[in-house]
Figure 1 (cartoon, rainbow, N blue to C red):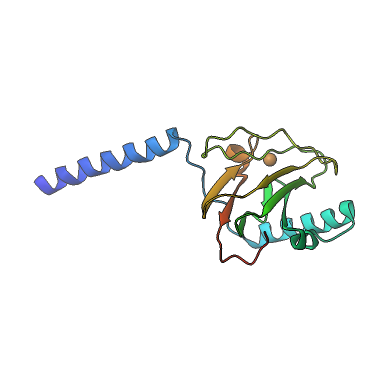
Figure 2 (cartoon, helix red, strand yellow):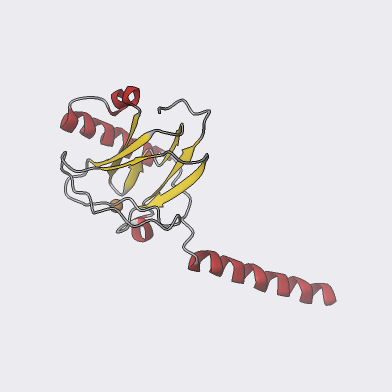
Length: 159
Ligand SMILES: [Cu+2]
């Protein structure tokens, strides 16, 4: 009987901890690369090439990693970069605007970026190794539009 009571208390504490994490604004993990997400990101790259006239990967040699925003998805949702790499977010959607918000790190939300080749969000990751989760202001709750940048000195790309 005593065991049962103890377990009940532990559960109550666990529930409280989960509630606190939510209240503190923890960013959810980025989505898994399901076949559906894969397809969205392949489409996003095709649209990028049509709009910008080059593959997004071709900017890696300049130390820039491109993340496309398309159909409520950051493509790719998770990137691993060397310190000093610049990440550039562009919107290849038809009309939906998106933002980039490192909310958990206490940063301000970027401007809403429209599907316009003149618009982009850029951030140079001169930051210590670690995980930097972010989200899209208008769509993270309703559509799960979240992403993560991992700064890792052993990464292949790009800075
Ligand atoms: Cu969005």
